[in-house]
Image 1: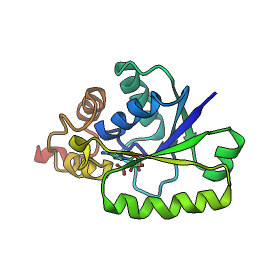
Image 2 (image 1 turned 90 degrees about the vertical axis):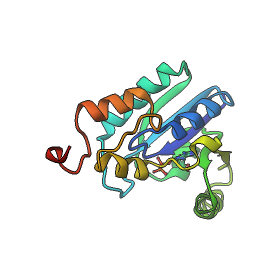
Image 3 (image 1 turned 180 degrees about the vertical axis):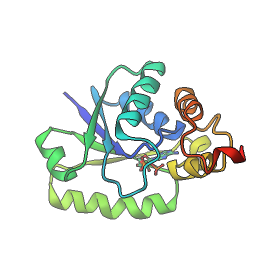
Length: 168
Ligand code: ADP
């Protein structure tokens, strides 16, 4: 069975992530979407919330071969122990490329069987990042069209991540 893994913080899931999930899921039997729980970034959403939102968005998109896991360990070990055929990463721009290439080489060094596959972002999503979304939310801007509808509704309905509600 061909199992790919797509790790990320998905905090929150954006249309850029969802596009990578849809495309990668067509290339394998099972796509393991791994929610990284120790990214070091200040989280907007709990891991539980992120997982729930990813599951809903993936179901809404009709993708039926996604398995969700939490991940906080050593990627090379996880890949070896769980027979992951390859890790999927999205590439938006040169900084992504610059940070991803040494990481891929290091993982290959750590485990010979480690393969990394890069999918180029859909050009429409090339400017989308979770940190940019967080900034828009912080200032109470609209995230419509940037994140899946269920993610937008959840964040807006629960007033998550806003600088201060009385400014709204
Ligand atoms: P972000 O970089 O948005 O904070 P993550 O850390 O969750 O997101 O990134 C997980 C993976 O998804 C990385 O490989 C990243 O390059 C990729 N990714 C993030 N946003 C996009 C996008 N808009 N298009 C394609 N890939 C993306």
